[in-house]
Every structure is written in C-alpha cells, then in structure tokens.
Amino acid sequence: MKFINYIMLLVFLGACLGCGPVPSGPPGAGATRAYNGTASSGDYLTFTLDPAAGVVSYHDLSNGARSSRVTFTQAVDGSLHFTDPTHNIVALEELPGTALLAVIQKAGPGRNAHALVVALPSQSLTPGALAGLSANFMQFRPGSGGIVVGTLKGGSGGSFQSIGYQPYADLLGGGAEPFMQAGIASRTVSQGASGDYLGISNFLDGAAYAFGNPKSWFAVDTSQGSLLTFPKAASAGFPAAAAGVYSALVYEKTGANMAAAGAPETGSLSTGPATVTIGSAPSSITAVDGEGKVLLNAIPLLPISSFSLTGPGALGEACFGLFAYEIPATSPPSTQWVFVAFPPGGIVFSSFTGHGVAGAGHGALYDYFYGAGVQQPAP
Image 1 (tube, rainbow, N blue to C red):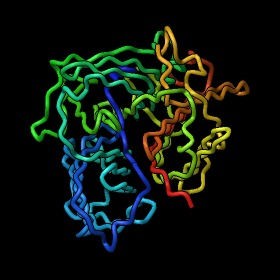
Image 2 (image 1 turned 90 degrees about the vertical axis):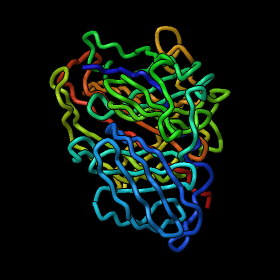
Image 3 (image 1 turned 120 degrees about the horizontal axis):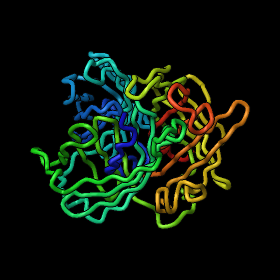
C-alpha cells in the first residue's frame, strides 16, 4: 500500500468562500458560472450553474455520470434546494463565483461511492502560476487513512516540493513513515486543452488535474483523493475574523479498518450537512452534523507549531495558518488529531482518531471525518 504518496500538490480552493452567501433570486439572476471540481473519491468534475434559469449541470469526467438539468433555488446561507433527476447529488452549497461544495453518491468507477466535492471557478491557469507558491494543505483520501496535512512550495514550470503528515501511519507503525517528502518535476505538468486546468502525469498512481487560484484556493484532483491548498498566514495568531458560524458539508467514516496492506478500508460511512461554530478568546471548534450528532465539542484550536508535527524531522516549517489539537486517551488507548484552516470566508477541517497505541499495526480501528464550509453572515 502506498500511504503517503502525498505528493502534496496544492490543495483546496483558496478564496472558496469569500464574503457571505447571497440568494440567487427566484430562481436567481446573474451570470452563468462554471466550476472545476475534485471529489474525495478521486473523480474530476465540471459544473455549470445558470442562476437565471435555476439550473445546474454537471459532468463527472472520471466515470461519465452527468446531468444537464438539476433545478435549484438558493437560500441566504448558500445552500441550494435542488432536484437531481439522476439522484446523484445529496447536498449542494455555493458562494457565487468563489466555490461550489457538494456531496455525491455515484462517484468512483462503479458509480457507487459517496464523496465530498470541492469545486472552484473556472479560470485560466498555466504551469508558471505555481512559481513561488508557499502553502499549507489538507488531503482528503478515503480508503487509506482518511487525511494528510502538510506544507508545499511551488517552483518554475509547475514543479513543486511537499511534505505531509498522515496520522494513520503513526497508528500503523511497522516502518510506515508518517512524514513523507515528495516532489513533481516540471516536465510532468502541462496546461490542459481548455486552458483552465493543469494536467499532471503519473501522479499518485494516475493522472491528476490541478485548478483554481494558487494565490488563494487551489485544488488537485488525484486518484487517491482531493488535495486542497491555502496560502500560509503571516503569523501563528488566530484570525479574529474566523470566529462565527459555518454551513459545511462532511464525509465521516467510523470503525474504519484495513486488515492488511492493500486491503479495502471497511467502516460505517455517513455524509451530509453540518454546522460548525468557531469560538474566539480562546479559539475553539464545535461541529454538529445534520442529524444532531456532535462531531467536535468546543475543541481548542492552537497553532500547529505548538505540537511535535513541525520543525526538523517533521513538517520542517511552522505552517502558520494551520491549527490543530491532540486529544490522547489511556483507557482504552487512543489519539485524536483535529486540524483546521481558514481560507478567506471559509473553513477546511478534519479529524483522525486511532484506537490503540502508536504502532498498533494493521487491524487497528480508526475513525475520521473531513469537511469544508462557508462562513455565515453575522446576525
């Protein structure tokens, strides 16, 4: 199994979620909006949203699933009340012109997988746009431990270097390296035919597609899940503007297990909406899913540099703008990591809980969830 082929290219929609969401009208006025999207299952999608007609069309280029007429109206919190004749879309939210978030249930080669989708506005993109990129990232990777976090730097011609931390590798032990460095050479990156994405060859066991704005939100769709990047902050301090309520979509797996290297990941899956509340002084995160289940309850948020994950031998950098919290337990033994970042107007968050001591090996149970959301206007 290749944990941590985290050739952590870039990742998530940099301004995804700018200011507060606005209603689209009845069914909505405004210009047609085009998005490129990455599903955590590894699917690459495109969306076109026509607010004047109240219609969304989408195409999953990885497995061919598509619909030309998803009708919708949009609420003030950004959620779209919709009807999908193909019964693929489970949840849908948009901040016009900044990000489109979705949960789909016909992802993957067999059109039978649930996935979280993050889609960014279509815009011109060349390999040269990655030069000078310095960002944090989260990777959503169902099927092999759930999440990775880390840092990356872009070079000329689309090259980049990255290092990521995968909590699952710490649980696994037995030679699995939790901190992995990786890189992509410029010769493997080229501008796509439509001009609004980069094609990357031989990346994480297959072709990959990068899109978005490297200076704000950026995403890479890979065969092993979604890479979402966001620029580093200037300091480790908590951003006061991040406090508030967010409307989010979440992918959660409990009782996950891989019996052996390369074995399928089992576990109980749920997806859907969630409400996330960020408190300040002190900073904390609370998350409740659409059925009222508490995912996180007032968990403190500290700069990730407060933990052993940064510095020499680990991520190597302070990763300003990335927040974390570690929750160890002894009876029974477990360790939970929570990671949070605040792109402008939005939130990206994830959690991994390993049940057992570090190095427990294959067969150990673990839980994880990840999500993205948009900040709601202050009351």
